[in-house]
Length: 296
Image (cartoon, rainbow, N blue to C red; front, side, top):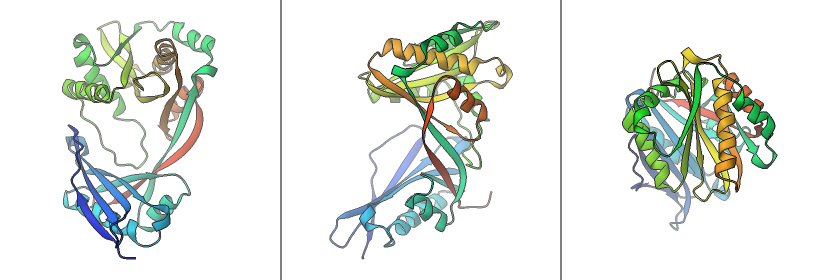
């Protein structure tokens, strides 16, 4: 089969990354596959690129995927990226394709879901009401209040040492502008960003946070975007406290919401324990695959 690869102009614009795209077409001009390449532009991730490659099932094993991968990998290498990452379900055709072309399994992630109708409200309420001396909970929808913007941006370093296996993901540099831009991006989609934080009462700084994005119509499933506690505040049960509060608030604010979803690296044992404790159950797993493009 003759396949033609066309570079596309991507209309998507994000403040901290750019995206390239290619379309694969057969001899009749019918699309048979595509690949998107995300190039991160912040200092802590300029070495890293992510790929999203798809080939129509009926067109697989004809070299289309290899042509698309070649285009994406070449562009990433030319841009100075040392790692190209993508994801696939364990044992899937995509996983076998990646393994045969030099990708290594860098980390596994377990996806979990909490059915809100079956949530154990008494247990969650008990978690929230349990005293945490020296700390208090606070929450908001949308953009962080101005008086907490600086400390919220600083608290994002809680994610810097999150166990990520051999993914080479790097670190994300957060400042107030980035925090506000992320909230604005969620709002533009019509969704609601709900944040719960634990505040250190000795100085008013944020010790940890958890973020939840809820569909704008309040139905379907919400998605946790991140939960982190600063190293100097760990061991005080803040992660479980904040997540339990977020679940209860989601039920109260969005009574038609079906469930909440999250995903956690298998190596992140503390967060997996928190998810288990508040009632999340596994739905599926995804493996993060990495191709080394340049020497480290």
